[in-house]
Figure (cartoon, rainbow, N blue to C red):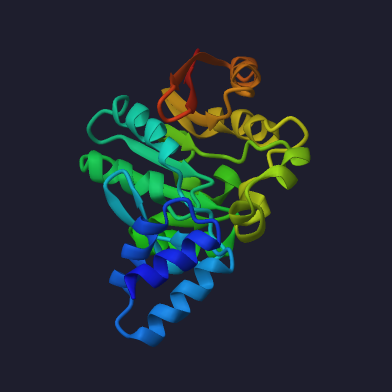
Length: 253
C-alpha cells in the first residue's frame, strides 16, 4: 500500500512523495481514511491542511484548512525575538495566523507573556488551539489588543504579508488557492501592512520596545526605511540557508 501511495503522490507532483506518504499512512487509522487523505492531497490541498498540523520550530502546530501554513523561514523571526526578550517581557505576535510564532516563542522562553492577534476569524480560532485562548485576539493589527496593553509591550513580532499584489498569481497553487489572501497580499510593493504596523506600534510599545518584521529580501530595504521613518533604530537580519529576512527596529526617544 505504501508504494501505491508514493506513486500516486509522485504522479501528482509531490516532490517529497516518500516522506508525505509516511505521514499520511501514520495519520490514517483505516484504508478508507487513508484514501480520503491521499485524494485530498493529490487534489492540491497543502499537506499541512490534510494532516491538520505543521511542524514548526520543533513543535506540532495545529493548522486548520484555510489558515496560513507556517514556513520554516520564520524560525529566524523566532530566534531573533527569543534572543531579545528579558524575563517577564510582554510579547505580541501580530498577523499571527495559526499562532506558530507566538507558540514557538512561548516554548523557547517560558518566562514571558505572549499575546497574539489576527484579522481573520479562522486564524484566531486556530491560534487559540496553539496558545492560551484568552491571549489570542480578533481584530486589525494592534487594535485587536485590550486597551490596557497600550504602552506595555516589550516586543512586537510580525510575519505580516509581504507578497506584492501583482505577484500573488505567480505563487505556488498550494498557497495561492488554499491560504487566505489577507495573509499573503502585502499591497503594491509588499510593504503596505508594514507601514500601518510601524505607524501604530510606538503607541503600544514600552520605552525601548522593539518591533520585528519578517519581510522579503527584496522588500527589506523598504521595510527598514518605513521603520526608521516611524522612529525606530533599525538593522536587518538575514539567514541565507532559510532564505529568511527580518527587520529589527528598536524604538528611540
